[in-house]
Length: 248
Image 1 (cartoon, rainbow, N blue to C red):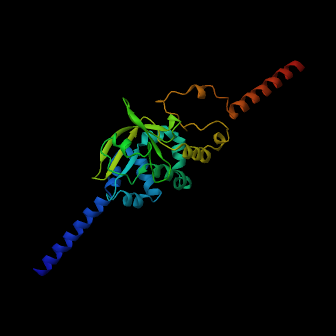
Image 2 (image 1 turned 180 degrees about the vertical axis):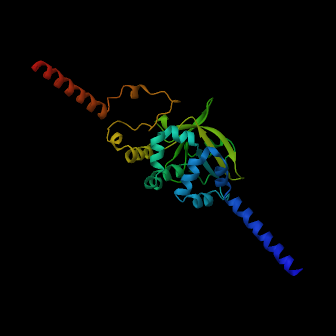
Image 3 (image 1 turned 90 degrees about the horizontal axis):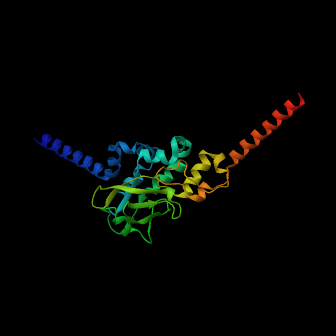
C-alpha cells in the first residue's frame, strides 16, 4: 500500500510539473501550434530566445507579443531577404532584432483589445525589448496601425487579431504590411544586398508592400547607380558599333 501511495504521489508531482511547464511556455506554445508563425518559431529557437521570451511572458507583468506571419515577413523582406536573415551567419544579428522588436513590455495594464494598444502607449509609442519604439497611430476606420517609423508608412502594419494568452499576456497579430524599424531594415539591406545599400537613396522596403501606394517623392527619385551603369555600358556599345560600321 505504501509503495502504491508513493507511486501515486510521484505521478501527481510529474503531472503538476508538466502543467507548470506548459503554463510558462503558453505564449511560445501558442505560436508553435499556429502554422502561420513557422518562421518566427524557428527563429526563436535558432537565436536561443525561447527561454527569454518565456521569462518575459510568464504572466507576472502585462506583456504583448506582436507577431508577424510568415506571409507578412516574406512580403516585407522578399524571398531572398528572408532566406538571408534566417541563415546561421545572420540570424543572431538581424533576425533577433526583429524578434525583440515584436516583444513589448512591461506595460501599465493588460491589453485586451486593439484600442488598448493606444492607451498603454506613452506619447504614442510602445517600448520594445530591442529598444526601438513601435509607433501607435490613432484608430481609424481601417483599424489600429502600428509603425516602425514615425515618418515612413511602408514600415507599418494593421492590427488584425488580438488574443489573450492569460490575464497579463497578449498575442497581437498584424497584417497588411511589414512592421520593422527603419534602422533594422537598413542593417538587413547592408548585410544581404550590399550593392543596393551603397546607393545614397533613402531607405526603402526590401520588398515594397502593394498595400501602400508609392509617394510622389519616391516616384520622382533619381535613377540608381546600377541603372546609370547599365546606361553607360549601352552607350559605349552603341558608339563602338557605329564606329566599327563607319570604318567598314
